Image 1 (cartoon, helix red, strand yellow):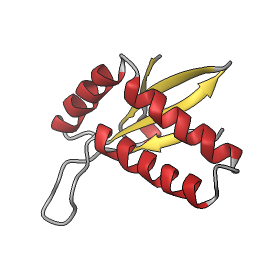
Image 2 (cartoon, helix red, strand yellow):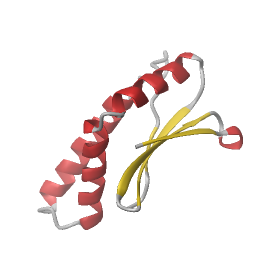
Image 3 (tube, rainbow, N blue to C red):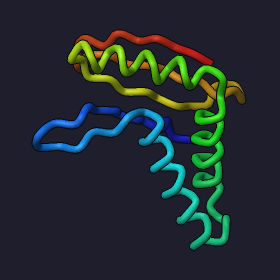
Length: 107
């Protein structure tokens, strides 16, 4: 499965923002619509749906949401990466620009 990158942002005059939970729910809804249209035959799409659902239901997702809000309040760019490693779902917060990324991992 390809990693899923969620990039939460605060709202500005030019762009509406989305919190981490809203982004994950939006992608989950999109996956569900596609799965229904394709009758669930796309394995990668099913895995993506399961990964997003796992993320939203995970006990650590609230902690990740709080942490991303903290970084956003400091004016930093944040990306949360959802991926599978050795059969386990992993979540990683990347803070800052690509050249100066600070990473934190959670399960």
